[in-house]
Structure formats: structure tokens, C-alpha cells
Image (cartoon, rainbow, N blue to C red):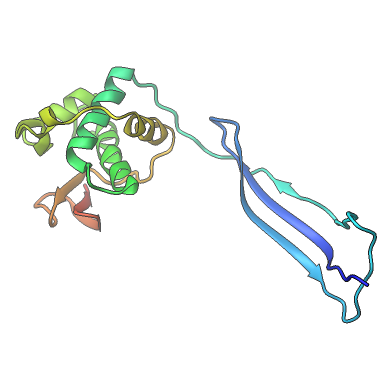
Length: 178
């Protein structure tokens, strides 16, 4: 005699990304009914009440940017955050994008990055020893679609700088808002 567990319900919560049209399952919950006496079922027969897929709208702000600017942001991100986590790299990218959107900073990636005394790696020679990495370019594209953080506009290494309101640290970087 074999025993089986009766599945009384499966709920699947999935989200469809508006940009890529990929559906990502975020949560699966399964309800089981385990009887005290074994229930014998024929092999390969499953009982499922329902599968519910809930598609929630995903709000995505989309920005168009030249491949040249994407590569420039990726280059400065490598120069500033080479040893940082993916999350830390995303925050550096967001700092640049948030500055482009902020009224107190220039409007283009190039102007933000080359603004005097802003990104240390651009004037201390570090950027000259770096190269553009495809995986960082992909992070830039993803952050253009949906940023990890819309508030960061300053970061410094090793401690909070004299500008902005301190927010949090990630790795060796300390991030601040305006």
C-alpha cells in the first residue's frame, strides 16, 4: 500500500515585467491535506483546485540613452566601484542618473561625470586603467528602466562627505541625498 499527500490548492503569484514581457514567479503557496489514514491514489494522478496567476502592473519609467553614454556610465562605475557588490554598482549608476534628473546638476551623462571635482576616478587617473564591461553596461540599462534608488546624488568612500544628507553605506561607499 502506498500513501500520498492530497494537494488541495496551489497559489502562484507572478509579475510580468512590462519592458521584457518576462513573467517572474515571486511566491508559490501550496495547501496540503495530510490525512491520518493514508489515501491511495492511482499513480501520476494529481488533484489541484486551482492555479491563480495575478499580474500586477509594473510602473516603469523609461529613458532613452545613447550606447556611448551607457558605456561612459559603465566605465566610471567600474572606476568608482570595481570591488563593490552589484548593488553597490547599481547605486553608483543611480547617483549619475539621479544627478541628470536633478535641477542642481547638468542634464547629460557626460556633463555629470566630467563635472569638476565630482567623480574622483575621472581626474586622478583611475579611469585610464579601467575598461567597459558588458555586465556593467547591462546594469546601466536595467537602472535606466527602473532604478534601485531614486534619492542618492552623492557618495564618498570611507565615510560620509560634507555634501548632502547621509542615507546609508554599502560596501566602502557612503551615500547621501540632496
